[in-house]
Amino acid sequence: MRTPGLLLTITVLAAASMPMAAQEKYTGPRPPKPDVPFLYHVDKLIETESGTATSQETKDATVYSISGPAASSARTPMAEPIFLVQAEKLKPDSLALYRMETRNGVRTVSIPKKVGKNSPRPIRLSVKQLGGTLYRVEAQEYCEIGEYCLSPEGSNQSFCFAVY
Image (cartoon, rainbow, N blue to C red; front, side):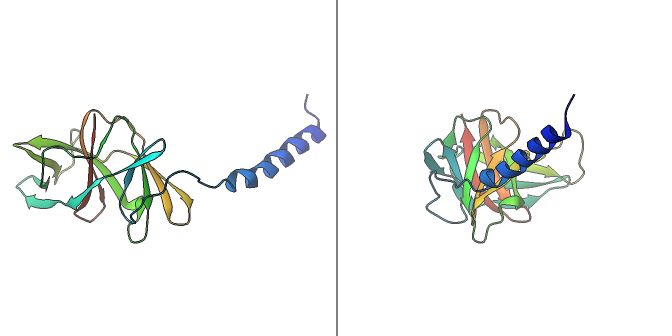
């Protein structure tokens, strides 16, 4: 049986501990460039491959292509990658993460005009502000080995990387 005094004590202690958790400051590495997601690996950052995707309309879909090599130079072994972004113009909560397919040496993603059960969909992301304009963006779904691209919604700007 709980007494009202015990319940009051627990409530006061829980409320008092909240400000302490909110006051924790991020002390890890910081991205050296603004508006570029960096893969976060324990104590080092790896810059994602920045570029602009080209789009081509087909009868059934819009195909986005990334020029350059068939594989990204930014690589991570993490199946649920974490990114740090120093946001000035880029809005981290507008980022979408897509798995790319490599066809004939070109990385592409095809977004169908009519969404079906097998249509590619963005991988869920969580976004957490670490302080000021520093954000942590984390994949909330398992990413299989392959090529991936972060892109702000409504933009052809791309930040590519590979999971190995």
